[in-house]
Amino acid sequence: MSGETLIERAARRLEELRLSRPDGARGRSSPDESVAAHEARTAPRPADGYAGGPRRPAGTHSQLVELDLKRLATAGFITPDAPRSRVADEFRIIKRPLIANASGGGETPVQNGNLIMVTSAVPKEGKTFCAINLAMSIALEFDRSVLLVDADVAKPSLLQVLGLPLSEGLLDILQDKSRDLSQVLLRTNVEKLSLLTSGTPHRRATELLASDAMARLLEELASRYSDRIIIFDSPPLLVATEAPVLATQLGQIVLIVQAEITLQSEVRQALAAIESCPVKLIVLNQVGFSGKSASGFRYGYGYGYGYGEGGHGT
Ligand SMILES: Nc1ncnc2c1ncn2[C@@H]1O[C@H](COP(=O)(O)OP(=O)(O)OP(=O)(O)O)[C@@H](O)[C@H]1O
Ligand SMILES: [Mg+2]
Image (tube, rainbow, N blue to C red; front, side, top):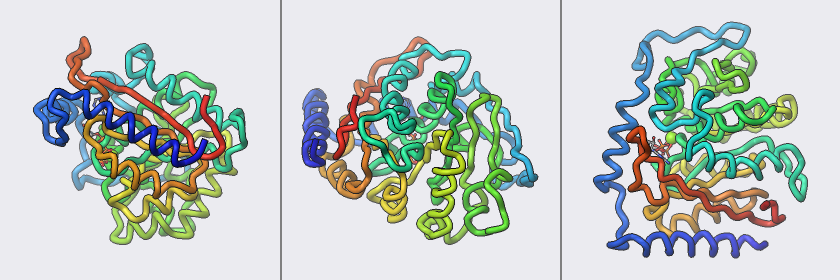
């Protein structure tokens, strides 16, 4: 399958969705969306110490943090106690080809297949929402450990969404060679799920993400942690110059596209930016987003996928 076919398929799907809207309109501030934003804001609250509070020092062993799973479930995330939901079902399908490629079970071996980037063309398309759900889904159902990395270093949100206090992480090990990854990893109360936060804010954060130190870290993650699936919640491709650089080093890319909102031209540009990545999975997020779940949360999640050269699809 050629890259061009993939782009055209994605564009056609988006156009169909856009035309299926009563007004065929594009907009990022529909009444529905503001309700979603409000629900998300009022659900998981950051724990004490998030807003400029004291930092937890990193020890020599991975720390254990407690995720408030009830709150996360209310906010629409997959959790161990609520493994059966529409979102869980959809991520079960999305993760399958990714895991096959990460484990060498795809049609063609994928270099660094255990390193998975979750990105989008522009901001606010649901990257963090999908990265957390993908990580949780894999950690719960497969006999695989998962490391979820907040690589959106200029605009990190993972800890805030998960309701955890600030902690050292990626930027700290990138700027200090003496720091070891294991010192800043956070274990969680979900047995197979660990976190690597974006770390202490740094004025050269975006340069650090595209640095040689990052390339070395990725090599280490791909080899020393080869039995783990590592998911990177990443910056948007068309806004952050470091995102396409990161994309060239990761084995698989999940491109989140906000259905009915993201422009075809934006999707085309984003796909062009990640052309060299061997495996690309396009996920259409918030398809038919007007439906409500029993809990009052709207999932309306949908997916569509296609692969570039190599035909890694299932
Ligand atoms: N499928 C979905 N169902 C319910 N809520 C969703 C869904 N996708 C995204 N959201 C909500 O939409 C908002 C934006 O999503 P999210 O923060 O994941 O986007 P993002 O791409 O990571 O944004 P940014 O570019 O700012 O990092 C959040 O409040 C999130 O909870
Ligand atoms: Mg985000």
